[in-house]
Length: 236
Ligand code: OAD
Image (cartoon, rainbow, N blue to C red; front, side, top):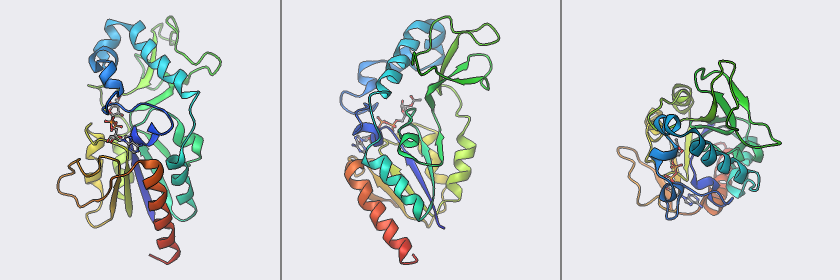
């Protein structure tokens, strides 16, 4: 089977009711990155950072995967599919995708601030990390999120996956945040790259030819998926 790699961003979850970051009324219009999404913010004010991510987690419980998440699952009948997501929600998993790599961490998990490998699921009864929730080293547990200024531990694994792709789908991302936005350059040169995003026509992806589908993921992606399934049935 051919391999498809879907690189997804906040836009794929927008139609589920989760705000993107950089669109009008996006999260970063209402919060300053430096107040809630950096290691410095964490050390300055645990309480504010915990509040920000606890709110995001609570919102997650009230939303569901949409057509776009579900259509990626349909591809699995005809292709090997890997999802590499910048999203910290779990909508790909809840839709049923088998292989999901979270580049920027996961809202449903917490980790020790001194041992990055001490990671636990957040209790689904409370759905929050509480102040005073300590790791075995006696330190406050933090969100399992990759903040600005931190390295992206899963980048190498993601790059390996992209290198093996026969087809790439980029869905709902502004391609503004590195190193995630650079993943595309690990792909083989001659493979098709589809970019499905209402702003696909406005976003530059230098030195790479891209099939741009300037539509919302919920309507644009199912059509691309139908096409790809048809191609696979015809032996292409
Ligand atoms: P952005 O908010 O930067 O970009 C969202 C993209 O989704 C834009 O290109 C929109 O045009 C597109 N979009 C909006 N509605 C859509 C829809 N219905 N269907 C498809 N696309 C739609 O979000 P990301 O690119 O995901 O990192 O941002 C990357 C990273 O920046 C995030 O993972 C987060 C953020 O800061 C961290 O917090 C570490």
